[in-house]
Length: 291
Image (cartoon, rainbow, N blue to C red):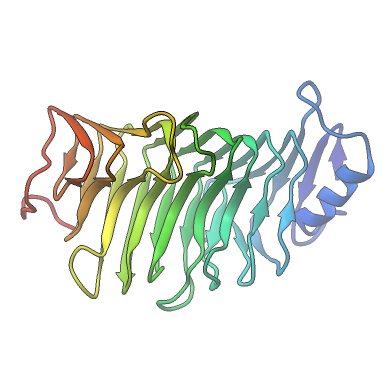
């Protein structure tokens, strides 16, 4: 069913039984624009794919109900679930964590203006599911928002969220990660709730809880800031009003970078660069809060 530039997807009872079929119709018509965007509403069900769904610009995917096991579930064990073209929003979706490393529920690529809101990632399988939630990689991506998301990850290594600037000059990325719960608890190699490189204006804030554990201590880092290939400027990330726990490294930033920590509990924070700390705990681990 289509009303204007709005499309409705359900497992039965509508012309569109997959998001890909709705996307194909969008691609066959006039391209969505900032004044005439496309919205794909998805009814509850499990939608399994083996190829990425490439969203056109100014196209959003919205679950009819908030994320839950009885809600709108997407699964891809082979590659990314969604790949973005820019100006895309994902809301009220549950991602069933896929098996393949270096794949993502939402692959921003090198595009701008992508939001992931009220989404979740869980798994129906055992340890070893390797898919991450979101990746942005390149020299142009910016204005990414991840908000009110829950991830219980069975990754054995890698990142839940990866934000990589590939240029030699630091970039202002205008990116927010707000009020998210990201948990990695099956690590056998190094894992990162949020991995960043060569960026400025990345803000992790508003009640984020990041935690992890694994087969050895200190495999998990809540927020990691790498310098990357930067030769001009100083990469900088802000952690505000957050809790980062587990037998882990709360945050780590490399030499030539700055981590600003404000009103946060970040036990086990380490640095080879500069950390500015205001009204925060960054000391040794303690048992005051459960992990």
